[in-house]
Image (cartoon, rainbow, N blue to C red; front, side):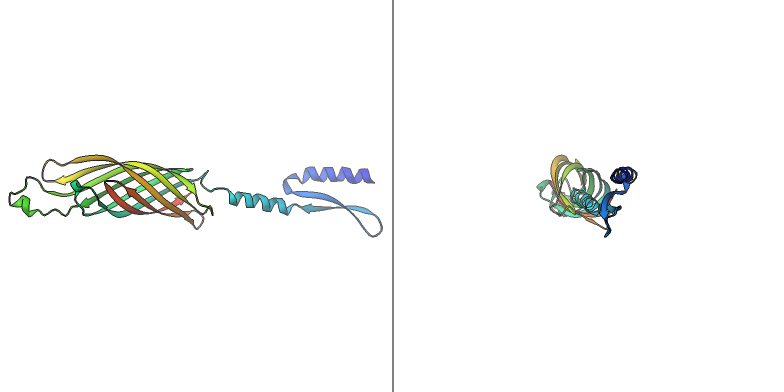
Amino acid sequence: MKKLLVFSMLLVSFVSYGQKLVPVIRTDAFGKEYIVYKEVVEEKQNKKSNYNNQPQTDYTFSIGTLGGIGNSFNGDFGSGLAYSYGAYIEIGRVGFEGIFGAGLTNNDPSSYINGNSSKYVAGYSMSGVGAYYKFPTQSNMGEYYFGLGYQGLDEIATNNPLWVKAPYGIVGLKGYYFNNCELKIEGNIGVITTINLGFGVRF
């Protein structure tokens, strides 16, 4: 009888391998042995818990858009309001972005009109590319990231426009919402410094 039970347990264990069932021998009130099958719930819960505790950035792909406002802290480009827009793509923990924009100066054109100045700068256009690396937050529901990029600035002037290329820093924080949606806030610190908000989707 015991040999038959052991054989039955081995057979059912093999058949139910993918179903997480474990055969257990029970004895009834009359001393007769029989087999019951117990599902391993604890193992499933542990695997699910371990999956949730893993960082969600290792195998993800994200795309999104950025937009914001800022200012110039470089005297050559005045101190007028600037705006920026762009897009980003992220593969795993690495992200890439392209930023574009324009700004106005506070220069008074009357000096140029009256002939007292040889040049008038109305504003500038901006373009830049950058890359950053992400670190998961403690709750794994978001990330913070740091990176570097390169800005190109072109004056909008009456003559001899100035062209400047300079590096800029990237600092940002991103959170996940509704499973596959993400929001971020990012600062680009350079000749033109901007604060951007972003929205994207995660695959």
